[in-house]
Image: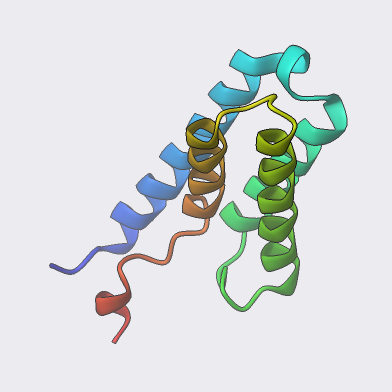
Length: 103
């Protein structure tokens, strides 16, 4: 099944919406303002790039979110499932679709 460009844009936008909602839900009690900024910047970088895999800034932003998620889990502030969901939503902001469709 081939994913169309409008479907990809909708999926990326939905992921971005989940991030905005999650940040609003957890607020400063679970994420410091600087941590929220890391997440927002990564989501923005991925949403607004045409080449998520080739954009060095977007890739670095994802690495920063992954590192943040690891710190949140290690400190006991977040569960692994919640941290994984956050990283997954950030990555989905730059989704290029299923790999088999890219061939």
